[in-house]
Length: 132
Image (cartoon, rainbow, N blue to C red; front, side, top):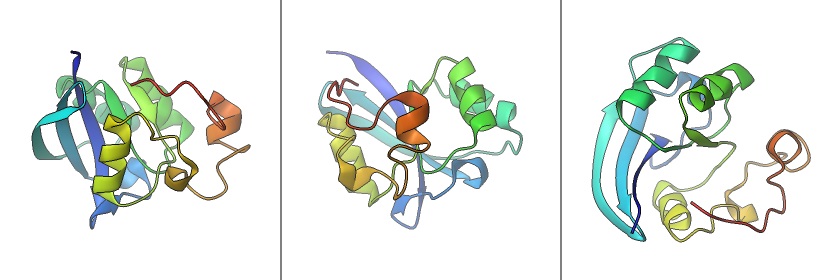
């Protein structure tokens, strides 16, 4: 089984609406389909590349977040971290969906994303291949 760490940007029990200004992350270690450990982390960096470096130091493999600017997304990806941006919903439901490989259900997609930013830029809209 593959062990990985996912960083989930959150606010008040939901995915934080904008990652670029969000400070709270859950760093969740997942082994296959099982959550092993979860800790709350505060992101201190304010600049895009600082924030990306912090995620890298935390050894995050994937970032799950709401809206994310192009610069911030590029910075995170440049650290070798996959970005699952423009995600919305209740925190526990999103985490469960990621672990169960169904995060791309329309229920977790921010309104207006399909065909605009999420789908157009990265080709995820209607995506069938749902690997971790």
